[in-house]
Length: 259
Ligand SMILES: [Zn+2]
Image (cartoon, rainbow, N blue to C red; front, side, top):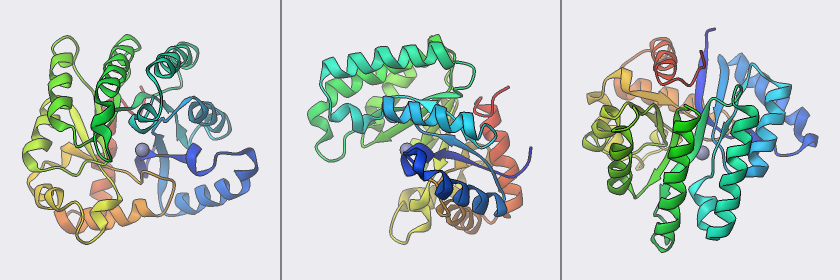
């Protein structure tokens, strides 16, 4: 298999209904013509998981399902609702373990009043870490304004079981990046890198990081992936073909391309 892999995409969110099929296929073919061969998803909630699995049935070579409870979803629900959804997640993993490549999105998001739900977010984060261990799946982490507490938790968890996976939409400094990498995780770089005035710490850190440390993502279902490619190629001085090859190896290394 050759071509670009989008390390973090949301096809189920971009095309949520059956009636979206024509638009989805048009978009997929357009991206395939630009050299993309595969998309790894990010999970949000039970509705999203169901749609991802349906899309996988239709496009098994294009969609890699990833199921998890997104911190944004957790923030808007009660402890009871989260516990119910976690039980559902466990059932989904039990029923579809062979086709689901990772658990995520999981983590914490303390932006926009997120500290108000800190306790609940940490509870669901921990429960999902346990579930990933039990089903031996890599992690797709969503971590915003919570690196300190997340690193502490991940470090503790890694003492029992080595970690694999990626930190999606990473935008931190070299020092923070090194800590995740040393835990066995890759940093996934999203569209913010191609925008002026954004991701400044990462723009500075990127040339110092090893090409084995990062992968690229759209965080959606579109052309923005190739703007990330151009930006990262410019910042690192590495040709796109080389980045394509290396990022694929990196995803393989953390278990996201399957066996
Ligand atoms: Zn996402």
